[in-house]
Amino acid sequence: MAAVRELQKDLEAKANDLSKIQKDISKNHQVRKKYTIQLGENELVLKELDLLNDDANVYKLIGPVLVKQDLAEANANVRKRIEYISAELKRLDSTLQDLEEKQNSKKEAIFKLQQRIQSLQAGKDKA
Image (cartoon, rainbow, N blue to C red; front, side, top):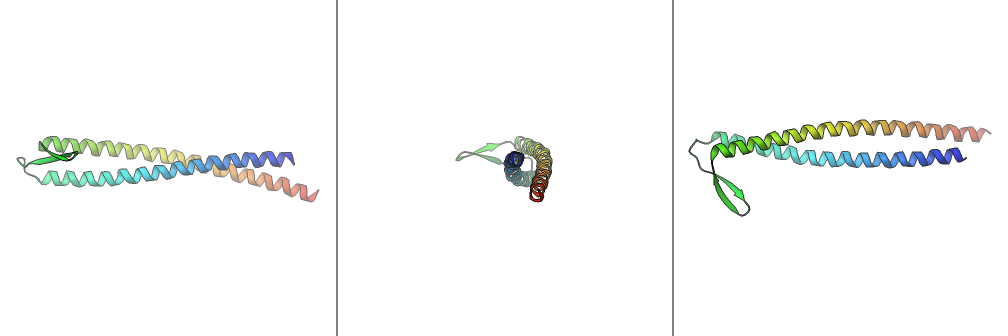
C-alpha cells in the first residue's frame, strides 16, 4: 500500500513538472508569434525603403516626434532589426525543440508510472 502511495506522489510530481513544461511551451509560442509578426513588418518596411530614391526624405518616429533620418541609416537599422529578430526566432525554435523533448520524456515517464501503479493495484485485487 505504501509503495502505491509513493508511486502516486511521484506521479503527481511528474505531472506538475509536465504542466510547467507545457506552460513554457505556450509562452514560447506566444513570444515566437510576436517576433514573427515583427519580422513580417520589418521586411515590409525594408521593401518600402528599397523602392525609394536615394534623395528621398525618411522620418523615424521617436516618441511623439518625427525625426529626419538618412536613407542608408534607416536601411541599415531595419536590416539589423531583421537580423536580430531572425536570430531570436532561431533561438526560440531550439528552445522549443528542447522543451518538446522534455515534454515527451515526462509523458513517457508518467505513462510508465501509471502502468506500475495499475499493476500493483491489480496484484492487490487478486490477493
